Amino acid sequence: MSRVPLRKALADLPPYVPGARVPVGAAAFKLSSNENPYPPLPSVVAAIADAAVDVNRYPDMYATELVEAIAASLGVAPESVVAGCGSVAVLGHVLTAVCEAGDEVVLPWRSFEAYPIAVTLAGAEGVRVPVGADGRLDLEAMAKAVTSRTRAVLVCTPNNPTGPAVRADELARFLASVPSDVLVVLDEAYVEFVRDEEAADGLAAFADNANVVLLRTFSKAYGLAGLRVGYAVARPRLAAGIRAASTPFGVSHVAQLAALASLRARDELLRRVGSIVTERSRMLDGLRRQGWTVPDSQANFVWLPLGDHATAFAERCTHAGVLVRPFAGDGVRVSVGEPEATDLLLEVTADWSRR
Ligand SMILES: *Cc1c(COP(=O)(O)O)cnc(C)c1O
Image (cartoon, rainbow, N blue to C red; front, top):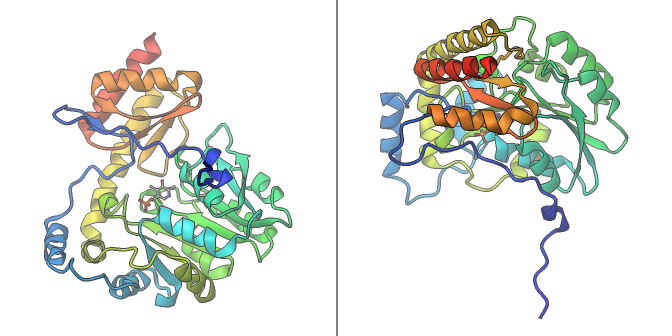
């Protein structure tokens, strides 16, 4: 009997490894998924509860009110905003909208582990360009990797998992050298955490370049990872293509109302982001004082380039009550969360350097 074949591309697909979860009944800090450590605001919980009574109905397919609120907050046209079920899903829709089978997509590596998966599923071929030892994207090398087969370039800024943000001058040079018919995706999942004054301004790049698409999310700074809302900002023609490639009704009514309530509470939520940024500095300073060499981080996580010791170090952290995210053979990413979690981490790192 013959079996239903699966697409050949699936055989080589790297798995998406989720960050370790806290076992039921155990006490541990979860610093493994770059989540926001703060629970939702009461106003957001109330919006979620209000939305619950309507879940027998399909949501507004285009998330009209949310899209308008996002557009107003960014100063762009509502036609330029496409909401989706998390920005990971939106990235998939972006690539589906522009890639033909066999097209190339240039991406930094190591970077967000969803990239190779999304590229492959879109039928394209990923071309990986190494990230520097300082954790920074090598935009010059990425521009050089663009060929006549390249349909898109993924720029993760700040880069997950290494942390630095792309600088404005680097991005300007890069955009000037990439052909205008190659899509440049700026993944700004952590943009609210950026404090580097030299960091690139994605919205300005979008205003100046018709081939730039921004990806943003409510999962990190806005603390709605569990509800899955993200969006793309693109010129209206591209946005229409992304919308056409999107899963219908991809953003639930509950998620739409929670995201709207979060935009209304933006000042309060951004104050929390400020506290996380302060905690990030404390984590980076503590590590550097212990002698660790860590890249600058403009996001809500810190990268420890532990190479072959990544897995062993992560196990030590688990024993100490902090769950972190190892990338075997490469390094460990630690999300910035509660101050007590930073203290525990710094105890493990101090111990580790004394070995
Ligand atoms: C977390 C993250 C996202 C956001 O994912 P959602 O699907 O919106 O939760 C996107 N890009 C990067 C680089 C991320 O780290």
